[in-house]
Length: 136
Image (cartoon, rainbow, N blue to C red):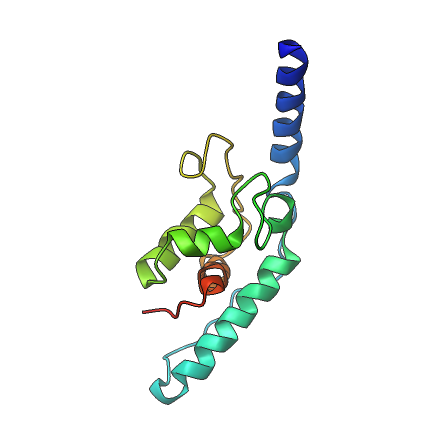
């Protein structure tokens, strides 16, 4: 019985690693130039909307759900764990691009090296906004 469970877990892990991070993003990196202070609130909403579109178009849903834990944590649980700061946006974007393990358990998150840092930061901003918190 233990061997069957172990085999199932190994197969599940192999399938997860095979599918996570396998879809290429075709969204080009964007240069926003110097921010206009008067447009900051609108720009923030646009960046979050762009992040949502990037998340929905990516393979994130293979391992993450909006509210329920799948292979990885739910996006809402991530938002609750991390304060919405520029430092955490950078940290989570780096995790998205480089992958990692150990923060939420032993199953590794596959790297998404095909994503630009800018797009990964948009995705991180969207995820961090899911608990209603604003960036500060």
